[in-house]
Image 1: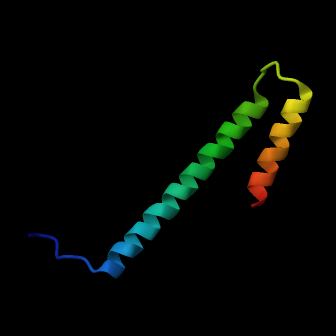
Image 2 (image 1 turned 90 degrees about the vertical axis):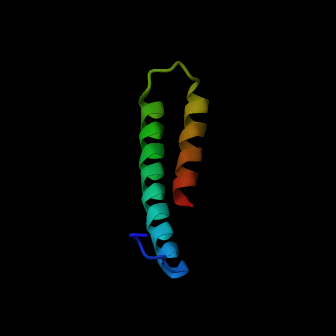
Length: 62
């Protein structure tokens, strides 16, 4: 076997790095989708658009 077995600690570090990378990519994707939705020319009532913006802002704050 070319690769020696890794310790649990080493595997946890790799997992942590991978999860942090995934979280950053998911955050970027969600921001992009939010912006695309809010900038779209959909014919939605103003109240619904304001509710969506409010929900997004609350989610960003937590």
